[in-house]
Length: 176
Image (cartoon, rainbow, N blue to C red; front, side, top):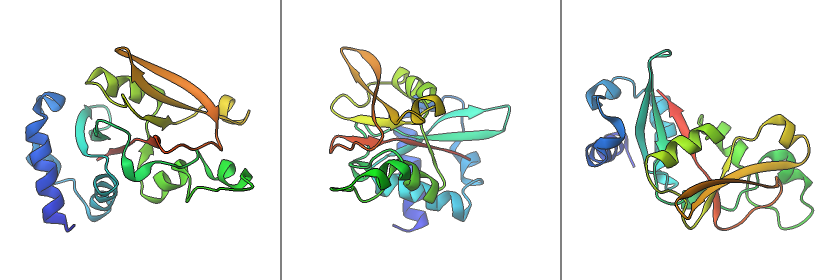
């Protein structure tokens, strides 16, 4: 996918999901799409995240893209939480870790607060779940958190950071 194709996909999604970003002008965003930003957005798109602008942070003058795919991005599933967890596995190691992939592609894994905000915009992860940025006090004890939505409610759970499942991926955000 080249940059003009990606920009057109983002523009069409922006128009389709107008309720997610009331008061934001797409043309303003185009001026912020540097080659580095476009590489991150390309990763988000090609791995199934369906990135879209969901907010503007006035204090930092940043527009925020989130993965808006209905389910956890299919191209980012079956990863354990971080490299420490990946290296602790003796057998059946996944390809990589969620945290490593996020760092490698210059994006951030959604926090618990981000995830609740996303879920306030619609119904996401009804059949899947997503790793979330895990606070040190949990991670230092070997755990990691993830979320999903059932019964009209968002749930946050914990698991061993070394675990991975075909229905658990990770969602990211990008500040532009």
